Image (spheres, rainbow, N blue to C red):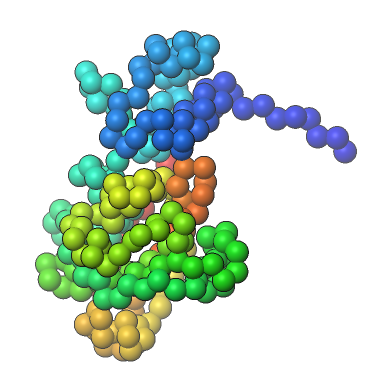
Length: 241
C-alpha cells in the first residue's frame, strides 16, 4: 500500500525552525529572541503563525513571555524553573529546593545499559555522580547521574561542590547543555543497604524509584538519572495536559 505524504501545519514548521535556531545556539538561555514581527518577516509567514509557534514553545517551557519586555529563551537558573524537573512536593507547606551533597564522582567507562540509553558506542567513557538531596536536613533523595564525556568534558568534583543552584542550571551555564525534555519510569522498590545508609532509613524501607532519560535540543540524550526517593512526607507530582 502506498502511503500518502504527511504534512505538518505551518506553525509547526515555524516551531521546528525556531527549535533549530535554539539548538544551534543562535539565542542563548536567558536571551531575548526577535519579536513576532521580525520572525514573521524572517520566515515569510503571518505574525499569527509565529505567535502560535511561540505559544507552543512557551507551554513546553522552552520560551518565556514577559509582559512588556518580549519573549526570552527559558533558563534553568530562573527560580520559576527550579521545580520543572524536580517533582517532589511536601505533603504540607511550599516546595523548597533541597541541599545537595556529593557522595561520589567518577570518570569511567560507562556500563552497557547506560551507553545504550545515551545512544553511545560500547565502551565510551563518561561520568557518574552520586548525591544525596536533603530537605530541612533530612536525606530524602539519592541520585545516581550518568553523563557522556563529550558534552561534559572537563567536569570536576570541584566545580560540582562550588555550585549551589540546580544541577541543570550548572550544566547550562558551564557546558551549554540545556535539558529540554525528559521521559521517566517510576516504580516502588525496597532500599538496599547502601541506599538505606545514605538515606538514613532501614534496609528494606519502601522507596520510590525514578529512572529518567533527559534530552537536549535536537532530541539528543545527554543524561541518565536514577533516583531513590523517601516519600513518607512527600509525593511525586506530575501535571498532565
